[in-house]
Length: 292
Image: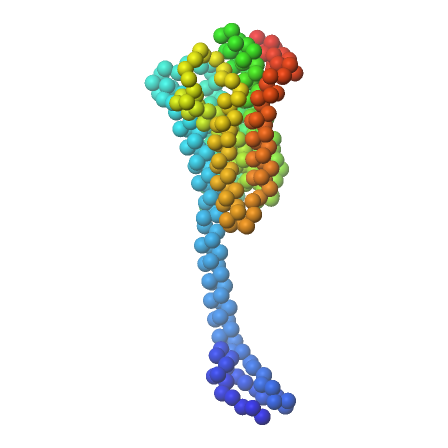
């Protein structure tokens, strides 16, 4: 029979020899428990370390969206408003207030989720439903007001053509938001849809910088529809950042980002040819006629 000192087997203290000469080992319960506890603690620390950046990623993206919205409208709205040189109808002011409030709401919601206050996050969600509904309604009213202003300047056709940009934008936002609400229990889909919805309305803010610093001076009135494509592409770079983050942390890009970004860019590009069709002019022109 083979006899060895049990100390040779590390954490295994006891060795019993069976009749066939094969040693049977009895693990020390205290050593096993200690090893298991250490492993669990280390595993939790690793998961907490890895999860911390992921938890706050959407908060950082929400802050980026809010900053883009504020800075984008600063030269054409916030600064003139502060100097009391901006004049617009109450509909336009309320429309701007609602859309900027949305960016702040998105920051609060992502902060609640990142800090683990999921009950508060869900309870505050009803505010988002009400806010998004008001945004859609006043987004429509603002589009009609812009068409009326263009008609007053003798540019009714240009106003009708351009109306496809805000109307399609608010429609895209509404569809994505509804999908996000339908997927509140599917967290990975819900949070990506909410980011897609937030990014989809940033092209208006970015376009203000294009118009302020890049567009040549010209007569007042709506800009050509094609110039709205570039700001939408710039806004989509935020989604590219999210895609890169997915690829680095998950090993793949989530389908919401792939199909959502393609759909968003498709809408922005197709606005141009559709805005020149007789069908669109009949549709938007009919809305304008009812509003007069």
